[in-house]
Image (cartoon, rainbow over all chains, first blue to last red; front, side):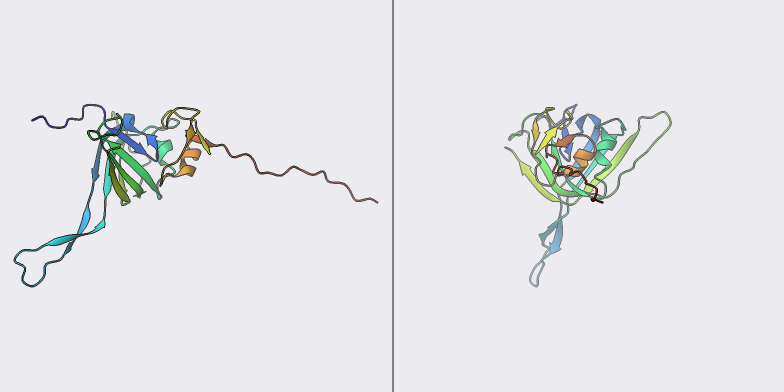
Length: 136
Length: 52
């Protein structure tokens, strides 16, 4: 059975802006706090879901050109926005679901991260927000 | 109403309808969209000097 491969085509939009061609990696983690609900009589610890605490981490090439990475992100740091990821840039469907964090918070933006002889890239973390997956 | 002025957002010239949670001010500031709102500035009135 083949596994999913990502050769060139995942899609990332931040605040509606398509940054796919600047993105080198992205991980959206859906997570809920685990609240222990073990009671007397139980023989194993059991948990129920608490608050959602989702997170998107991305690696982007930094560009200061018009409508590129810096222009997109500069006004978003310290605010909440919406990010959307898809396995491919094709239309949303059962085999290409979209994953959205609405109201996710960008706490920090490395405005410059320079190393001699390397393309400049930055790491971002969007925290929190309401998670939704869609297939239509 | 807003109009797309950067292809990173969609087809330039199309209307932009923001979905929930989109930071419109950031998009305008960075030159991705422009507002179609007409200026609400009122017309200037000419000042007349008081009669002497």
